[in-house]
Image (cartoon, rainbow, N blue to C red):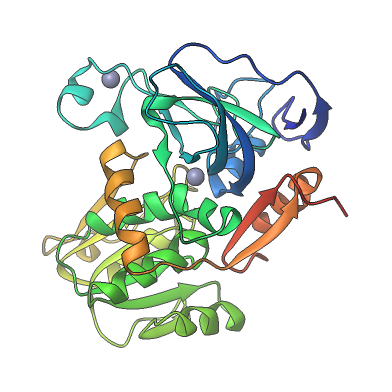
Length: 331
Ligand SMILES: [Zn+2]
Ligand SMILES: [Zn+2]
């Protein structure tokens, strides 16, 4: 099979031909139909998230079809499944026991501790896979598996907030905006200054307001979610939320947060982070998405063009989400 492999952080992925992986008991072997390209992959490839296995096949938004599973598995042959970032947990630590498996001390992550979906085939612990029925086609469904799930978890962290600012209008924000509209909440979209296309994209999805991240929104917001990995946006977002409001940092990595006057935090404003996902988040969100129904805007890339997709994401040039589709032939 083909796999796009990271041999050393800071270097481009290289296409490698290798054997289809052997499936351990309790795992499924899937043929990858699509794999989303997440900002986390970019952090891994660029060496901003040290500690990944090397060599590594990145990718944790995998839509695939079961080729092989245990006898008696809940997944049958040819069934469509989704494989997310959370690859396995210990099931026994204080976090796993408390319903916070996203914080498990021994968690293993897809496309980080174990090979992911930038390949023709992947294996995954079946307890952490999700059944993935329609209506979205394979490539369109891929961004649900991280951008959607993490966005959903970040949105839940905003509690009952009615007005929410989204900083960074990429894959996650374009899905969250649709969930928010469904729930009767108003989206205020913040993009890089001058990104008129991004702002119109946000408005087209129902955002009540869209502007530059340096702008003050027309009204104080109940909450804000930061999807952009830019620490300087944290104080900006604090200034945009009302007293008692909350700023949720949804990324796995962010540049340093600059110092700011305590006054901006005072009056019970909060800053929290969101880490990973639980299987419950996945079940809730994947159950909700078809009812909304969430649609995704994607750019498809051939597997061999993974570096091109990562580069477009790095430059902020992707509208919606980038998705690798193994059956496409490269440029
Ligand atoms: Zn655990
Ligand atoms: Zn991700």
